[in-house]
Amino acid sequence: MPEDFIIDNLQGILDSIELIEIRFANIAKPDEFVMNAAGVLTLDSISMRLQIIGELVKKIDKINPAMWRKYPQIEWPNIMKLRDIISHHYNHVDHEIIYDVCRNHIPALKQAALQMLKDHTGT
Figure 1 (cartoon, rainbow, N blue to C red):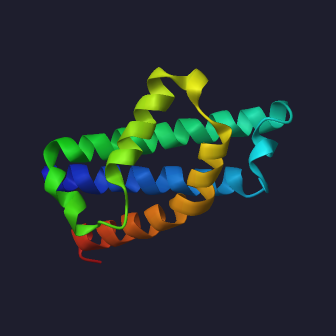
Figure 2: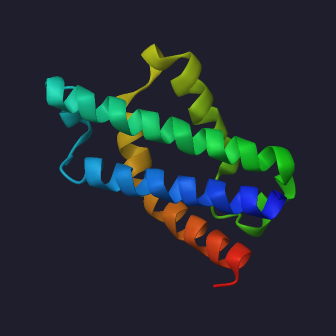
């Protein structure tokens, strides 16, 4: 059961990352998130997916907090903290931080999640 739970949550993380990549593809600079209604909609939809990723990381953390030590290249506590900010203080979400997360951290998270999924499925 815990292994299936971890695999399902890792797949959920990857699903959200793929949606973020699609939605972020046309964003060239942070201000594009706030220049017009379409940008704000993109910011909102990416933020929701980041919130989901944070929630899934928290769920895994509850049953296997030691798992993160195998993947130290990712700042797991920051993922959970960003989830809390998006969930509880959405009006404080900074579009420049979301841009930085998408541009600089999502690619590494994707690679780590793929490796974790491989490590847990054996494929």
